[in-house]
Length: 330
Image 1 (cartoon, helix red, strand yellow):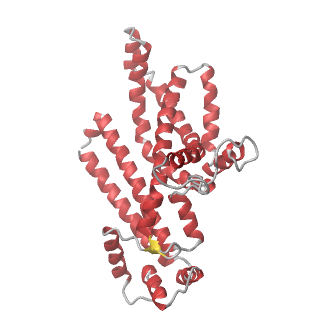
Image 2: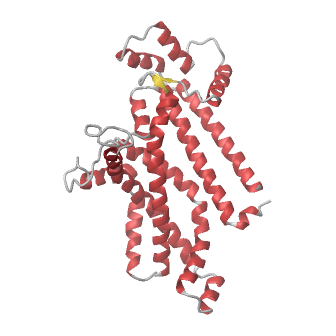
Image 3: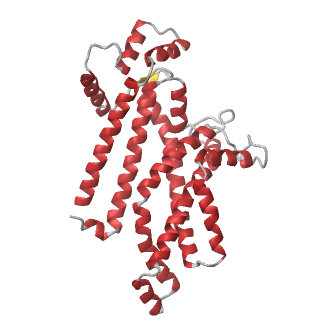
């Protein structure tokens, strides 16, 4: 419990730093972001003096309050779930993020779960059968790990996407067929969502699975030389039992490194969403940056930070539960 409380304190500190940076970003950018925001808002309609004052209040310009008072108001608004108002979408940032977040979380949970299970399983098999033809998987895994997410996404689109030039098997734009189906709990919509998620999910899985393969294989090779594994083999225990003993202990460092992996996966998925125009947090963050919608950028940054910290905390909890040694830390 002490270990979890200590980690929880670290995550609260990280969250506070991230929220503070999010507050400062619109206020330290060069130039005048209010002018850009007013220009963008004026394109969709008349931005009168009240509109300008509202934008200035959100960004902290030309207001007769100190930066400390603005910061306290910002934290207070966050506590009440108020992330501001998006002038590019003319809607509250909170409502927009609630529309974007399910797409990102759905893709992230499915892709990360598959890549972790498949990567660790393949890593165990490669280590157990080291010296066999399975070793040829290692160069491929190393190659995939070195490829940037966005570049792999472009290659996948080129080969398998309907907007590509080769096989054209799967749709490669948007989260569903925006021209042929109506959103809602109906079979055509759900089928379209599934088919449009295949290529983005495959990209994230291929790019992130390689790291789990290499980490699990290296840990498994080291664990197989431990005394308890040699004793289990000398007793004549079934191969599957011995493999499970070794894999269970080799998995602990992989779970410990999962907190780093999840951050890399989230960062990579943002780029994947941009390539596929997938309607998640990453794509709309890129769109908001192009429109200079600082309120929406700020809100998305806050949500991404909290999601990553929550995922890391969950991984730490799982690690403490599966490793008794972590509970004995004073």
